[in-house]
Image 1 (cartoon, rainbow over the protein chains, first blue to last red):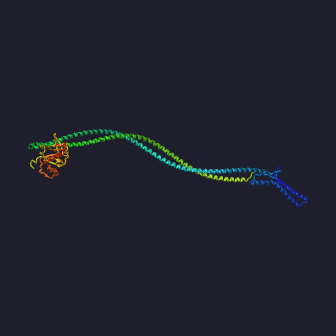
Image 2 (tube, each protein chain N blue to C red):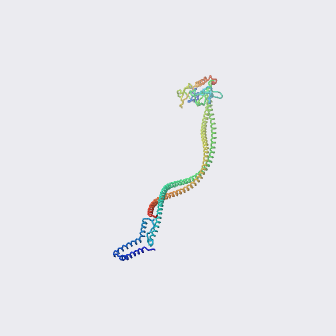
Image 3 (cartoon, chains in turn yellow, red):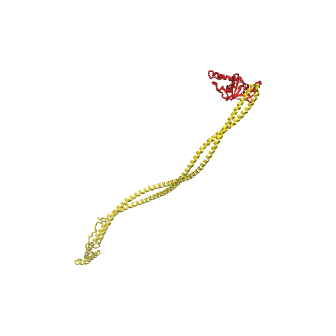
Amino acid sequence: MRLAFAHKFALGFFFVAALSLGLPPLLERLGMNETLAKYATLCVAASLGWLLANQITRNVRSLRECTDRIRQGDLSQPVRLSGGRHFPDETVDLSHSIQDMVQSLCDLVGHIQKAADQVKTCSEDLSHSSQGVKQTSQDISETMHQVAVGAESQQEDVSHSAAHVHAIAEAIRANADAAREAFRFAEDTHQRSTVGVDLSRLTVSQMESLFERIDEATNQVVRLEEKTRSVNRIAEVITSIAEKTHLLSLNASIEAARAGDAGRGFSAVADEIRKLAEGAGTQAEQIGEIVRQLETESNRISTLMTTMGEEVRAGREDLDSILRALEQIQNASQEVSQRSGAIFEKAEDTASEARKMAEDIESIAEVAKQNATATDAMRRTLGVQSQGMDAVVNQAVRLFEMSVRLGEVARRFRTE
Amino acid sequence: MTARERGSWLLFRAGERDYALRIDALAEIVAARAPKLIPLVPIEVGGVLNCRGEPLPVVDGGLVLEGRRSGSTRHALVFEREELRLGLLVDHVLRIDRELDPSRLTSIDDPVPSAGACEAWKQTSLGRQLGIVNTESLLSRATELLVRNGEQSKEDPCHSAF
């Protein structure tokens, strides 16, 4: 039968009160004085009250002991009540509740211990992982630093390459301009060579006419020379005749002298003959002199004409050579013009390709610059991440320490 | 000099000087073509000319008059003495001077050792040296030259024409 705690106290109080009221008269009846009876009643009432209270509060003490054990962390002992089996009261309920609480607390502590262990393990793992991640982050940061350095170097190299490619593009453009000028010059040269060839052909034609006239003049000079020699021979004959006549006159004078007086007339004739011979001889000498001069002049002219003829022939050969050379130059200039045109076109294409390549190189340089910047930013981010990982590691260490402490706290509760 | 001596003189040049020879001492004057060689007789001495088909021995006038061979000779003065017919090669005959009077010309010393071929040396009005030739001395000397060379060749069957 359930009897509430308050009822138990009320009954006990009633019983003690009843005893206190009824016992003194009883004791007085028994011959105890009033005061002694009161004191005895008081003692009995007190003792009975203490017993009743003790009985009533026995469970409370058990519960207190239990809670003390619980406070001390001993959850292994069940909640046992020393009394109240026959008249259960709230203490029994309380014991049940405390038992449930202990059970729940045991479960909780168990869970906490497990959780603490798990947290410890996880914190250890987290610490290790954080350490690993930190190390990895450091490695990545170092690698990113190297990549950043390499990217910067690459960016510089690409920038230099872009500058070189720009220079090459400029040079190619200049070459294209030079090729254009060369093409125009080749065209002009070809036209001029064509004009030169035409003029040379005209000159050759005129030279051939001149050669013919020179040859004719040379032949005329040769004929004149022959006639001059003929005249010279005649003059020599005349001179010889004059000389012989002079000798004849001398001999006539000699004969006239040998003849003495009879030869005087003959001597006069001889003198006249001598004078005639001298005159003829003088004229013949003059003729001879003139002829010699003519011969000298004609020889000179003939030599000059011969030299001119040879020079003209050589000049003609040279002119033919020049004409052939001009024709070759014309052909070569035409070919050069064609090739220059092709080169010019190719140079233009190459210059265009070079410009595109320069632009591509610049784009690559820009990308490299961006990569370098991004790499540097990533490196800084990794640095920040590393710092964050340091914090994580520190937090993991703290968590580990907390889990250890939690485990220690949980282990203060004995569940078994 | 007598009127006969003032007669016609033949002026000729031999070597480097002019000479005068009495015209009546000459037989004729012929053109001096290249003389033919006489065996064993040096060409400097003379040779043989073909004078109208007849051989005419000739002697170098410069060698006879000056002791030195003449340059190129154009005329030969032909002398005749009895059976001797001899030619004297001279550079060329200048003229016949009918007015020459050697006695009026200035005498000068013998510039060359003419070995007596010139009887006198005069200076003309133009300042030229003129040798007055002694015909006999001239022929004598010429003959001597030829004979001397002829004697040298007597041992040789091919001896001179003299």
